[in-house]
Length: 149
Image 1 (cartoon, helix red, strand yellow):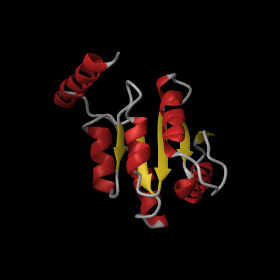
Image 2 (cartoon, helix red, strand yellow; image 1 turned 180 degrees about the horizontal axis):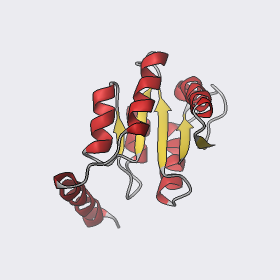
Image 3 (cartoon, helix red, strand yellow; image 1 turned 30 degrees about the vertical axis):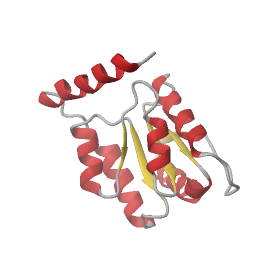
Image 4 (cartoon, helix red, strand yellow; image 1 turned 135 degrees about the vertical axis):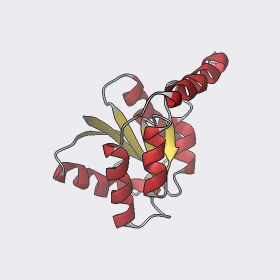
């Protein structure tokens, strides 16, 4: 498994912690930026991670900004991306099991380090259950396909 990581300046430090955490677990990643706490625009990095997942270079993605909101909205603009903003382990697990989320968004200014790593672990370890959930995820794709220009 390979995970694309991205953040703006507000999520940079959390992204770096996640990189170290993934290294400790032997999980490969691609860092899509940013590379400092200097102010940048989150849509650029949400898009980079989402495109990396969509293209298949990475199976999953994790994005971080101050709240996780802006970067998750940006990632979700890329067709085929299902980015879930999670602030607890239950939501992280459900986003994968029921919604087949392929990108996780985290808010660096709203989560403590330990909880953030628990959410990451829970999300990575969870698997899509398929079945009735697949029908619903397909309906999400149908909506997306209707509006793709």
